[in-house]
Amino acid sequence: MRIRELRRLQEWAVLAFAVTLPLGQAPPEISLGIGLAVLALRTALGQRRPWLPRSPLNALLLLWFLVAVASMHNSVDPHASVSGLRKLLKWFGLYLLVVDTVDSPSMLARLLRACLLGLAVEVSDGLWQAATGQDLFYRRAPHLVFGTVTRLTATFHHPADLAIYLVSLCPLAVALGLRGERRWRWPLLGLGGFTIVVLLLCFNRGGILALVSSLAVLALLLRRWAPAALGAAAAAVQAATVPAAIRAWSAAMPTILQKLTEPERLMYWQTALNMVKAHPWFGVGVNTFVKAYPAYRTASDPYGQIGPYAHNQYLHLTAELGLAGLAVFLALLLRVGISLRRTLRAGSGAPALAVASAAVGAGLVAYLIMGCLESALFYGRLSLVFWLLVGLAMATDGLRDSAPPQQGAAHGT
Image (cartoon, rainbow, N blue to C red; front, side, top):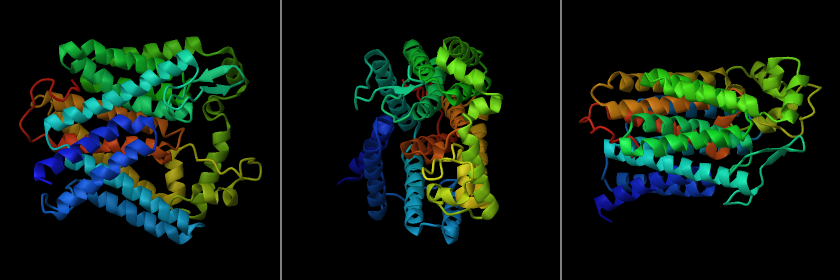
């Protein structure tokens, strides 16, 4: 196979990954596997050098992996920890694949379009589920709570999972709608609006908080008031449309903290803290939070045999990898933030890259806020959303020194 054909196959694998990411676990993982296989083949054939894509995060990824290996000393299930190491390699592989593939403004534009297409498919499925009572792909009914309240899930298993995906990609549609080519302005803004409609029908507290915060950040980065106003309007509509059963439940909660945590999350968080206290530096072992849960739960915790996620990705990460793992994660976020800031500051020379950077940065803000109430970083394909955004952030930074793209080139148009 010729060099150009292999390169094109790698690009199509990444684009297929972005489009199919919301559709289930298998389609994006198959696309990711093909992309990584082609990347490895191109490297073996000498079509690309060096053997590992260059990235400012490579040292941190290696350190993260070494901390995970060290955490296995305390693992209650070595087999589960080995599986956790494989997950890390998959996450890191996705990141490196995106960084290697997005090597031009035109490829960035294509990948942003693929992300928007995936979002459009998921939003359409959510609206279909709202209208017909089942989603189009898996015939899933909405999630039912309090006997009468339906919460949309679309292709995901839980409303919170759908909310994580929506809030992470919504800033992209809004930003590129506001600052993209005029002919695509209303379709993209319409997509952002329908994304918010589906999110509202999830009735997810963390989702609304993440949406409002991320759109406020987007407004600051774009220096446009419209995203912040859109977020405020979404919050007002959500407050006005909360079903009576949810209002009654909320009224029965004595504090705001308990309203946010249900309050079962407080028990999960206490168990995670117990793990950190027992093994502060390297945790109880990568990928073993569920396995270790019964040994560290409080006596009043009725979930000891269920072993839920921590419902907080920071506590979950620290419980498994200790303070060392948390420090690496925070260092990675800091480095990504520095790259985003550099691209934004170069906005006058490459406005399309700056807008893409603002959108990705706002999406990451939404994802990180959702992580305060959900273990998003450990939820199957939703973990891949984070690494896709990180890959886009670092790839965009890497394009700063290339020739400035034409206006709208990276606007998903």
